[in-house]
Image 1: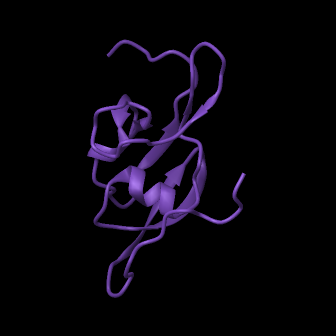
Image 2 (image 1 turned 90 degrees about the vertical axis):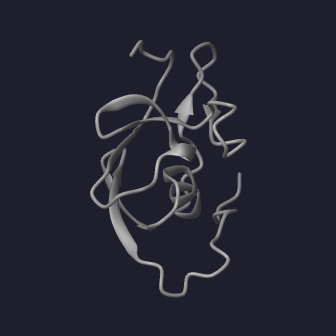
Length: 102
């Protein structure tokens, strides 16, 4: 498994850094991008687990088709992280096992 993030911003010039919480720990991420892109750039490689085997999953398509990036964002489960813009103070949690009905 890689030890360095595979995703890095092309230019981090004047883009603002913001604080979010992921699984109870504080992360400083670049703003103005999707939650999925921000977490990947911060080195997060596991977003959820599969309901059958518990295998780790992470974003795949980054455009809302595959549903591999499901997270709980600010208390709302089953959010596609690639379609949500990261905001300061967000509380983000991994989803474990089967999705809950909304």
